[in-house]
Image (cartoon, rainbow, N blue to C red; front, side, top):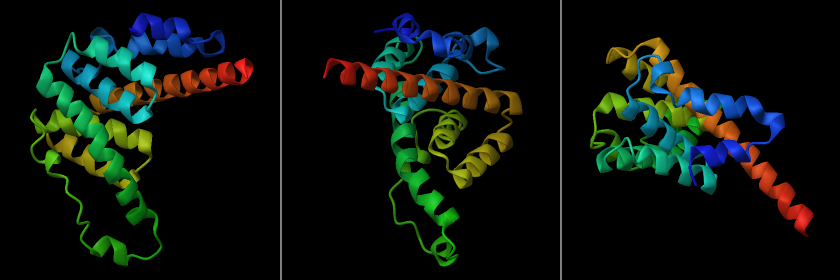
Amino acid sequence: MNIDHIKQRIPDYARDLRINIGNVLDPERSEGLSAEQIYATAVATARASRNPGLIAAIESEASKHLDDAWLNAARAAAAIMGMNNIYYRFVHLASNDEYGKLPARLRMSVIGNPGIDKADFELMSLAVSAINGCGMCIDSHERVLKQAGVSSEAIQHSVRIASVLHAVAAVMDAEQAVDMEAAA
């Protein structure tokens, strides 16, 4: 499966997503992101969105633009943020401030040594955190990115990638559920 197959599977009621998926993955419309940053963010956010067909299509396309270090970092960003976003969202939302003072005691060494430039990893982590809805993580990653000199437009574009891929995954999941119900 590839991106064109994904576009063909998007029903007409979601045709805006068909257009947007092409736009957010286009380096000429990327607000200063490199092809590596675009496709690594796409891999991380497709994985965070959990649709197998979308993951396969995005990783197939991304493998044309990314080496193994970038692919592994993108997968690691989705994995580690899957854990951190739940934990830190709890810390942030709990009425009891005591949890914020306790050590997390969760291994997350990949954040310090992701195998690619730290700012690139932070960009992916921010996009995954947007999908997972962790405001504390969004603020933390955005702050690191701004300190690294990443523009607001580039940061916004990474979240555009996340929003479009998450929406495409939701549509694909819903259509699969409808198809399964019709077949039953």
